[in-house]
Length: 152
Image 1 (cartoon, rainbow, N blue to C red):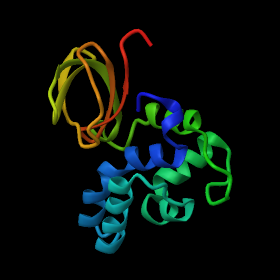
Image 2: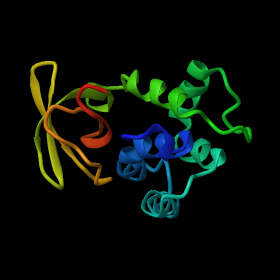
Image 3: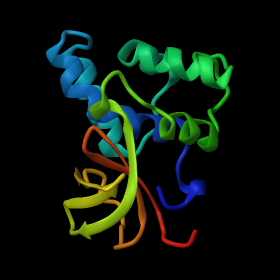
């Protein structure tokens, strides 16, 4: 997101994890009801609770706990920087699962294309983030999750 103060760590975690929901449903790792609940949270702007992450994204939570050295199911809010650092370093199980970073080369309301290590990668602007050419974009599973303005 552009402004660190406008989002919680929990919400940022959700926005990074959410692109994995469809594949997790297809693999039987989460239920359709859980997926629907996650979609409501994404669309409403509300923060999820830690317990839901443990149920829906146990592998990501395990890795997050190892990296952040926190109690994932506790009541302490997660800092945006802690969540951001975790996801930006996320390499995933396969290259397509990694969070990719690159300079925005093409942008419209729904799609951006970034230059990631010399390769142009498309991403869906599912969260309708403001983005301009030259910004740095962070994508996960072909979904734009965060944008840093050029020069920031």
